[in-house]
Image 1 (cartoon, each protein chain N blue to C red):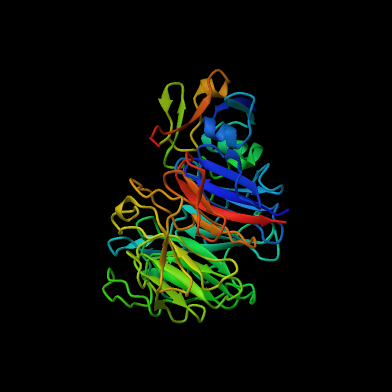
Image 2 (cartoon, chains in turn purple, brown):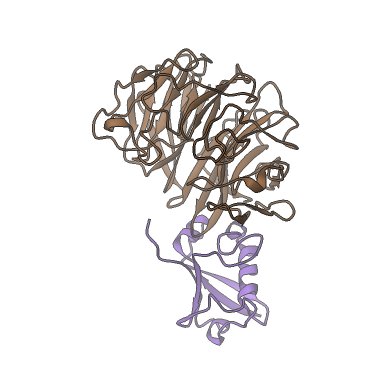
Length: 102
Length: 371
């Protein structure tokens, strides 16, 4: 098991009524993949279902990106292992809303 | 003493506006769901403390919120809207097949009798129903699998199911409208549907009197006369006296019959309100003058209502779900604008006051009349 830090965008923190900072912490079984992290996140915070990935297809929503360790992981397979620094808890997995006006 | 509660959905959150029966002094709470688009909120006629809200975002998708205390607090319920079976295709703007894709909920219509039952009108067009307060949603797939559906096309705002009307005298009868497919009716509680567009004439169609393809903007009904429906179409104001089987044009002396919003007086079933908009490419009032038009004869003869409304330099729009009426003895009429104003007439349209004028663009207005 690894303890993973996930940084969420402000609108999702408000939506899920998370007031303890910008991150949530999740216990994930190895191998630690994006899919497992998102599954665990949605299990821990059911109100986030559908906000990061489509509820039916589980595809990443178009304006959502996944960053970690200065890398864009958005187009990686969700079943690839996450970077070692994320698995070790030194770096967060960042869920980011694309910058767009309005 | 009676009071009223306005539920305003805006581009950046929801607002709850309350007043006593005089409708003079208002208290505004919000924004709720800050930064999210709130296409629609509506309270249950069976329990006014139960309110449903459609919350959506281009970034984060669709959410549904529920309040059980009149809008004081909210909790998210399920937003899992799954089309039944293989969704198939409808027509895209250019007439090519396009897969059915869920985008958002435009309209929530709570049951007239059960606070836990609520209908959701979606884009791409489909009707969903929950019987457990929004915790689970099931598609009434007979609509989307209607034989005409592969030929439906989106309007400029998307292929949205934006109007849901429940017949108070017949629980099996539901009327809905889709832009730009037209109006449809079910007489078996949503199992099967038929287009009800006879009498509509849309010049943008190859066949202007086609069975489907009409851009219906909104439909309104007075609960005392449920077979009489009033429609604001893309162009044309229409009425039907047989629950949509046949429509007749009632634009009469309107200066323009383009518009989005339409509603009916709570106590006078032949008194109808529209807000004429200049044209389909100029979504603002004629000559910069914001005028509500009222017909007391069920259409054709219309009078402008201007007292208290801006009569110069006004270039806002009034969207399809942004007009509502209360049911106090002196019927109140309300509407919101894309400029963020919410107006109230406490006397059936004769006089208007500005409740608030700096909200985000108003997408929807509903009113609850509270005992």
